[in-house]
Image 1 (spheres, one colour):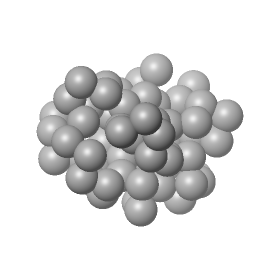
Image 2 (cartoon, helix red, strand yellow):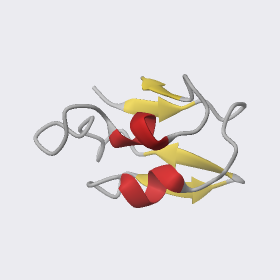
Image 3 (cartoon, rainbow, N blue to C red):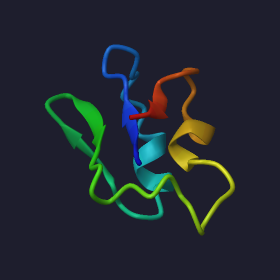
Image 4 (cartoon, rainbow, N blue to C red):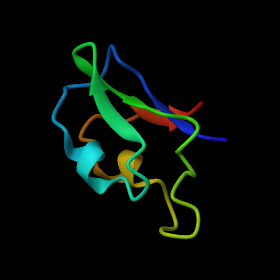
Length: 64
């Protein structure tokens, strides 16, 4: 499984991109997106996905 970013809620702050241990997050088409092939939900690195932890807008980084 992976996480996704709800584009309509994303403020494009960029916090998630730098916190992702798998470099699964990138800026495309004026918003951030998560590559589901790279996303591991931070399993093995953190107890909770870091994109969700650092996002300033609740429920923007959610399970896909």
